[in-house]
Length: 281
Length: 274
Image (tube, rainbow over the protein chains, first blue to last red):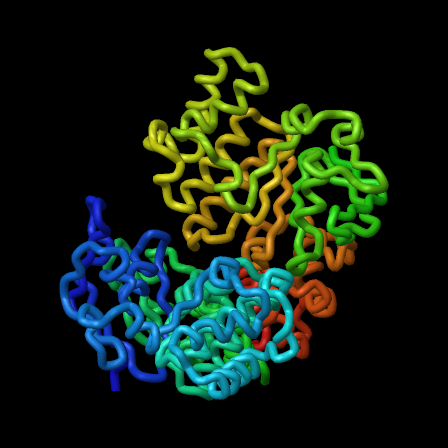
């Protein structure tokens, strides 16, 4: 069952001379973990802004084509209505956090919905638990590390119990271990809660193994859309210069030298497995 | 070129960010400073150009203590490119941005003009000469920030997190550019989390944790040491992870480069076929 259905989306920011989205059609299934990637300025963030109605309701400009997200037509629903279904987590958590305690930050969206106090407390507890930050409850967000702050930002979005969460390069400012832990939290939300994840990301070495669907954009268009192994192995992805995982690069170099592995590995664990099959005798 | 002698640094808030750092960076070296968020990497490099001065200990740049010269004078030798270009850019046009520091250093009009044109061409920004830096994309603004520093030709260039927000192709361009700068004799220091980027550049790596240096050496050795990696919150590059999983075959464990990895695996494969 699809949860996002875009047909022929075309969009130009007010005052811009160039279209930022050109004839974008895309289907994302309920419960998928999709990675959206492509060169800077290719339209990834613009497309994500459509998913929760920021485009066209906040950024204005004309959005042509049709877009249905979680059974609602984006053009006909307000940002407030879309926000209950689609959560957004940004690159820099500092831009998203503002309350004096982690708990208050996570509760903020719920307060705005006018949720009864008891239910709110339950939701906050649950969101803190799911993101592994129960012990940070009383802390001030600005005193936390970047990785902890990003978890608070995720918890705030999760508390709203959206069907879909869009993560826009959520780990750019984090050290590699912090980044890996955030990807694991995201993967948990996807596997355990069935939340549909759309991850905008350049660093595919760390993220590829979690995804079942990869979408590559270039100059406002979707140029590749499919299963990760297939996409990373396609000539077009290599020509575009997206960050093909090193495991895939190694696989291809080996293949060209006559060492054939069974299938394209997209993570180091898979590469080790495939190499063992060929080398260990 | 830079000599750091047992320095300590405490911020006015009381946070002790550096706890006894000693480090020598030679003329023409290429060094990556790595480690977890909050390890003190940026604090350390800000001590290299006098933006910060050690609470205890000494930093010598080209033989002179940073306590004895002004930041303005040090900047002539040590150029600093900030993580966020918006902390650095303020002029109305790209051209003005690059010319600003040159005028401050007292270059004459003709030299300023020559250097601006040179820097614009170097970073592929000639088309944006008259554009406002704030009209440009994040990646382009980073290039403007870099151009404005390179224009005055400092002996040492420090880049704080140069790969953040850059897509794969921009990173590849940046890598080639940094390697080229270094080959032309510049001392280059980068502060970064990006293990794959470091694996591709292969500089000397200085690893920090909680205000101290915990390792210093070849990228190949540091990035493949799983104990060190864990201590410094880094994840070994993907190629290192793969070789770590294959050590039982008797393969080396210190491999970070894809081409080298291929060579070793192909040789092993051919050997096993015989």
